[in-house]
Length: 274
Image (cartoon, rainbow, N blue to C red; front, top):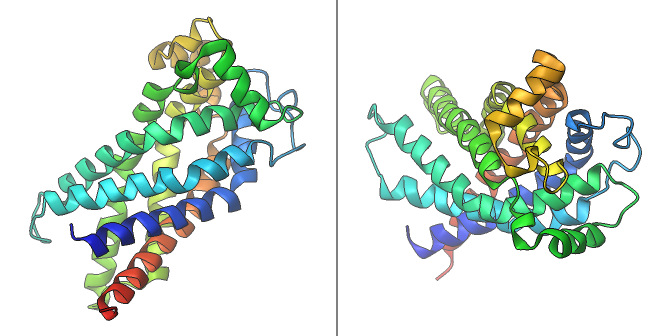
C-alpha cells in the first residue's frame, strides 16, 4: 500500500471512529447498563449517560485508525480479482487482523469507559487510576480475549456483507456506489452482525465489570455465557440487543459512510497535490 493510501486509511479511520463513538455514546451507555450484573436501574438508569465519554474520546481515533490501516493493508497484501470466489475470504481475514490489532488500543479504553458508565458518580481518570493501582496494567486488558472473540465474529459477518452489498449495488446500477450508498450498506451489515453477536457482547461486558478476583474476572467467555444462561436464560444472553442493534446500525451508517467519504476525499487530494 502506497503512502497516500496509508495516510488516507489512517486519517479516514480515525475521523470515522471519533464521529460514531461520540454521536452514539448515550445508546452505548444504555446497552452497557442493561447488560450489567447489577441491573439497569442500579447501574445508573438514564442518569449520566455521558459518563465515561473521555475514555471513548481518547481511544476512538487511534483504535479506528489502527483497524482500517490493518484492514486495507491486508486486503492489498492478499489482492485477488474482484470476481474471485476468494474475495469474501480476503475481507474476513483482513477484518480479523484489523480487530486483533485495534483491540490492543480498544480494550483499555473500553474497560475504563464501561466502569464509568455503571459508576456515573466517579470520574473517568479516578477509575483509570484505581484500575492501575489495584490490578496493574493487566487490569486494563481484562476482557481482551473476550473482546477479540466478540469482534472477530462480528467483523466476519459485517465487513464481507458490507463489501458484498456495495458490489451488488454497484452491479445493479452499473456505477460505483456513492458514500451515502456505502453508508446504507454499512447500516444493514452492522445491524445484522450486532444481533447475532450480542451474547458475546454480554459475556465481554460481564467480564469487564466483574470484581477483581472473581471467577468471571478470569476472562473465560464460555463460563461467563454459562453463568448468564443459568441466571437469566435466553433473555440474559440477548440483553441490550435492541439498543446494540440501533447503535451499531446507526454506527455502521456513520462509521463506514464517513470512512468511505473521507478516504475518497483524501485520495483525491493526494492525487491533485504535486
